[in-house]
Length: 229
Image (cartoon, rainbow, N blue to C red; front, side, top):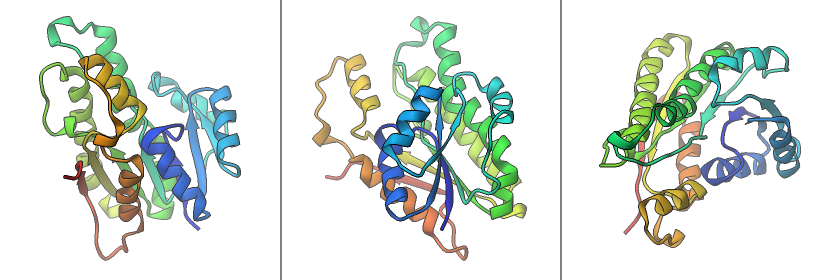
Protein backbone atom coordinates (compact mmCIF):
# COMPACT_ATOMS: atom_id res chain seq x y z
CA UNK A 1 0.00 0.00 0.00
CA UNK A 2 1.50 3.33 -1.12
CA UNK A 3 1.25 6.69 0.65
CA UNK A 4 0.56 9.86 -1.34
CA UNK A 5 0.24 13.56 -0.58
CA UNK A 6 -2.00 15.32 -3.11
CA UNK A 7 -2.70 19.03 -3.56
CA UNK A 8 -5.80 20.20 -5.38
CA UNK A 9 -7.82 17.12 -4.39
CA UNK A 10 -11.07 19.05 -4.19
CA UNK A 11 -11.83 19.34 -7.90
CA UNK A 12 -10.75 18.60 -11.44
CA UNK A 13 -7.68 16.45 -12.03
CA UNK A 14 -6.84 16.31 -8.33
CA UNK A 15 -10.25 14.96 -7.40
CA UNK A 16 -10.23 12.39 -10.21
CA UNK A 17 -6.79 11.17 -9.17
CA UNK A 18 -7.66 11.05 -5.47
CA UNK A 19 -10.77 9.00 -6.21
CA UNK A 20 -8.69 6.47 -8.12
CA UNK A 21 -6.04 6.25 -5.39
CA UNK A 22 -8.69 5.88 -2.69
CA UNK A 23 -10.51 3.17 -4.65
CA UNK A 24 -7.40 1.02 -4.73
CA UNK A 25 -6.78 1.41 -1.02
CA UNK A 26 -3.72 3.69 -0.97
CA UNK A 27 -3.03 5.89 2.06
CA UNK A 28 -3.90 9.49 1.30
CA UNK A 29 -2.77 12.81 2.74
CA UNK A 30 -4.61 15.77 1.23
CA UNK A 31 -3.50 19.38 1.47
CA UNK A 32 -6.20 21.93 2.31
CA UNK A 33 -5.92 25.69 2.53
CA UNK A 34 -7.87 25.90 5.82
CA UNK A 35 -9.57 23.75 8.45
CA UNK A 36 -12.99 24.02 6.84
CA UNK A 37 -11.69 22.79 3.52
CA UNK A 38 -9.83 19.98 5.29
CA UNK A 39 -13.08 18.80 6.89
CA UNK A 40 -14.79 18.79 3.48
CA UNK A 41 -12.02 16.66 2.02
CA UNK A 42 -12.18 14.16 4.88
CA UNK A 43 -15.94 13.80 4.37
CA UNK A 44 -15.49 13.30 0.64
CA UNK A 45 -12.59 10.85 1.02
CA UNK A 46 -13.18 8.82 4.21
CA UNK A 47 -9.96 7.53 5.67
CA UNK A 48 -7.82 10.28 4.16
CA UNK A 49 -5.69 12.44 6.42
CA UNK A 50 -5.33 16.16 5.85
CA UNK A 51 -2.66 18.80 6.19
CA UNK A 52 -3.61 22.47 6.38
CA UNK A 53 -1.43 24.98 4.56
CA UNK A 54 -2.18 27.89 2.26
CA UNK A 55 -0.30 27.64 -1.03
CA UNK A 56 -0.89 31.36 -1.56
CA UNK A 57 1.42 32.01 1.41
CA UNK A 58 4.33 29.59 0.91
CA UNK A 59 6.52 31.34 3.49
CA UNK A 60 4.18 30.05 6.22
CA UNK A 61 3.99 26.41 5.15
CA UNK A 62 6.91 25.37 7.33
CA UNK A 63 5.33 27.03 10.37
CA UNK A 64 1.94 25.46 9.60
CA UNK A 65 3.36 21.96 9.32
CA UNK A 66 5.36 22.34 12.53
CA UNK A 67 2.01 22.36 14.36
CA UNK A 68 0.66 19.24 12.62
CA UNK A 69 1.55 15.61 12.08
CA UNK A 70 3.16 15.03 8.69
CA UNK A 71 3.68 11.74 6.84
CA UNK A 72 6.92 10.01 7.89
CA UNK A 73 7.36 8.61 4.40
CA UNK A 74 5.83 9.33 1.02
CA UNK A 75 5.72 7.23 -2.11
CA UNK A 76 4.47 10.24 -4.03
CA UNK A 77 3.98 13.97 -3.67
CA UNK A 78 1.57 15.07 -6.38
CA UNK A 79 1.22 18.79 -7.13
CA UNK A 80 -2.11 19.42 -8.87
CA UNK A 81 -3.42 22.65 -7.31
CA UNK A 82 -3.09 25.82 -9.35
CA UNK A 83 -4.63 29.17 -10.21
CA UNK A 84 -4.95 31.09 -13.46
CA UNK A 85 -5.54 34.71 -14.39
CA UNK A 86 -5.31 35.75 -18.02
CA UNK A 87 -4.34 39.22 -19.17
CA UNK A 88 -1.91 41.18 -21.28
CA UNK A 89 1.46 41.96 -19.74
CA UNK A 90 0.60 45.65 -19.93
CA UNK A 91 -2.55 45.12 -17.89
CA UNK A 92 -1.32 42.64 -15.26
CA UNK A 93 -0.60 44.12 -11.81
CA UNK A 94 2.11 42.85 -9.48
CA UNK A 95 -0.43 41.22 -7.16
CA UNK A 96 -1.65 38.98 -9.98
CA UNK A 97 1.88 37.97 -10.89
CA UNK A 98 2.76 37.25 -7.27
CA UNK A 99 -0.35 35.21 -6.54
CA UNK A 100 0.16 32.90 -9.52
CA UNK A 101 3.87 32.53 -8.90
CA UNK A 102 3.25 31.74 -5.23
CA UNK A 103 0.54 29.13 -5.78
CA UNK A 104 1.82 27.58 -8.99
CA UNK A 105 5.59 27.60 -8.46
CA UNK A 106 6.96 28.81 -5.12
CA UNK A 107 4.57 26.78 -2.96
CA UNK A 108 5.20 23.50 -4.84
CA UNK A 109 8.94 24.09 -4.47
CA UNK A 110 8.59 24.78 -0.73
CA UNK A 111 6.19 21.88 -0.16
CA UNK A 112 8.64 19.59 -1.94
CA UNK A 113 11.50 20.86 0.20
CA UNK A 114 9.54 20.16 3.37
CA UNK A 115 8.54 16.67 2.22
CA UNK A 116 11.92 15.57 0.86
CA UNK A 117 12.91 13.62 4.00
CA UNK A 118 9.71 11.54 3.70
CA UNK A 119 10.24 11.11 -0.06
CA UNK A 120 13.87 10.06 0.39
CA UNK A 121 12.87 7.49 3.00
CA UNK A 122 10.46 5.84 0.55
CA UNK A 123 12.52 6.54 -2.58
CA UNK A 124 9.36 8.16 -3.81
CA UNK A 125 8.23 10.26 -6.75
CA UNK A 126 7.32 13.92 -7.13
CA UNK A 127 4.71 14.66 -9.80
CA UNK A 128 4.21 18.20 -11.06
CA UNK A 129 0.98 18.64 -13.03
CA UNK A 130 2.08 21.50 -15.23
CA UNK A 131 0.29 22.80 -18.35
CA UNK A 132 0.77 23.23 -22.06
CA UNK A 133 1.48 26.84 -21.05
CA UNK A 134 4.61 25.54 -19.36
CA UNK A 135 5.98 24.77 -22.82
CA UNK A 136 4.55 27.51 -25.03
CA UNK A 137 2.81 30.77 -24.18
CA UNK A 138 0.21 32.65 -26.21
CA UNK A 139 -0.86 36.28 -25.84
CA UNK A 140 -2.74 37.01 -22.58
CA UNK A 141 -1.08 34.00 -20.90
CA UNK A 142 2.19 35.67 -19.85
CA UNK A 143 1.88 35.68 -16.06
CA UNK A 144 0.34 32.21 -15.86
CA UNK A 145 2.88 30.84 -18.34
CA UNK A 146 5.74 32.36 -16.37
CA UNK A 147 4.59 30.47 -13.28
CA UNK A 148 4.39 27.23 -15.23
CA UNK A 149 7.79 27.71 -16.87
CA UNK A 150 9.11 28.17 -13.32
CA UNK A 151 7.55 24.84 -12.30
CA UNK A 152 9.34 23.16 -15.18
CA UNK A 153 12.64 24.61 -13.97
CA UNK A 154 11.99 23.36 -10.43
CA UNK A 155 11.16 19.87 -11.70
CA UNK A 156 14.17 19.64 -14.00
CA UNK A 157 16.61 20.76 -11.31
CA UNK A 158 15.04 18.54 -8.65
CA UNK A 159 15.22 15.49 -10.90
CA UNK A 160 19.01 15.71 -11.12
CA UNK A 161 19.56 16.85 -7.53
CA UNK A 162 17.61 13.93 -6.03
CA UNK A 163 18.59 11.17 -8.43
CA UNK A 164 21.22 9.82 -6.03
CA UNK A 165 18.62 9.71 -3.26
CA UNK A 166 16.30 7.55 -5.34
CA UNK A 167 13.63 10.26 -5.68
CA UNK A 168 12.14 10.41 -9.16
CA UNK A 169 10.44 13.41 -10.74
CA UNK A 170 7.73 13.52 -13.39
CA UNK A 171 6.21 16.53 -15.08
CA UNK A 172 2.81 16.08 -16.73
CA UNK A 173 1.72 18.62 -19.33
CA UNK A 174 -2.03 18.33 -19.87
CA UNK A 175 -3.73 20.15 -22.69
CA UNK A 176 -7.08 21.77 -22.07
CA UNK A 177 -8.94 19.63 -19.55
CA UNK A 178 -12.60 19.83 -18.52
CA UNK A 179 -12.13 21.33 -15.05
CA UNK A 180 -13.52 24.34 -13.17
CA UNK A 181 -10.27 26.14 -14.02
CA UNK A 182 -10.89 25.57 -17.71
CA UNK A 183 -14.40 26.94 -17.37
CA UNK A 184 -12.91 30.07 -15.79
CA UNK A 185 -10.39 30.36 -18.63
CA UNK A 186 -13.23 30.28 -21.16
CA UNK A 187 -15.02 33.01 -19.25
CA UNK A 188 -11.88 35.15 -19.32
CA UNK A 189 -11.46 34.46 -23.03
CA UNK A 190 -15.10 35.33 -23.69
CA UNK A 191 -15.68 31.89 -25.23
CA UNK A 192 -18.47 29.36 -24.80
CA UNK A 193 -17.48 26.39 -22.65
CA UNK A 194 -18.29 22.85 -23.72
CA UNK A 195 -16.67 20.30 -21.42
CA UNK A 196 -17.11 17.53 -24.00
CA UNK A 197 -14.52 19.19 -26.24
CA UNK A 198 -11.72 18.78 -23.74
CA UNK A 199 -9.82 16.04 -21.92
CA UNK A 200 -11.68 14.26 -19.14
CA UNK A 201 -9.82 14.77 -15.83
CA UNK A 202 -9.96 11.00 -15.34
CA UNK A 203 -7.81 10.57 -18.44
CA UNK A 204 -5.10 12.80 -16.98
CA UNK A 205 -5.38 10.83 -13.74
CA UNK A 206 -4.74 7.64 -15.73
CA UNK A 207 -1.55 9.17 -17.13
CA UNK A 208 -0.38 10.15 -13.64
CA UNK A 209 -1.06 6.64 -12.36
CA UNK A 210 1.09 5.25 -15.16
CA UNK A 211 4.02 7.25 -13.82
CA UNK A 212 3.30 6.30 -10.21
CA UNK A 213 3.08 2.59 -11.00
CA UNK A 214 6.02 2.30 -13.37
CA UNK A 215 8.62 -0.23 -12.13
CA UNK A 216 11.96 1.22 -11.09
CA UNK A 217 13.80 -0.18 -14.10
CA UNK A 218 12.25 2.63 -16.17
CA UNK A 219 11.16 6.20 -15.61
CA UNK A 220 8.65 8.69 -16.99
CA UNK A 221 10.24 12.09 -16.70
CA UNK A 222 7.88 14.13 -18.89
CA UNK A 223 4.44 13.27 -20.18
CA UNK A 224 2.25 15.29 -22.55
CA UNK A 225 -1.51 14.66 -22.58
CA UNK A 226 -3.44 16.25 -25.42
CA UNK A 227 -7.12 16.27 -26.43
CA UNK A 228 -7.97 13.41 -28.77
CA UNK A 229 -9.29 13.78 -32.29
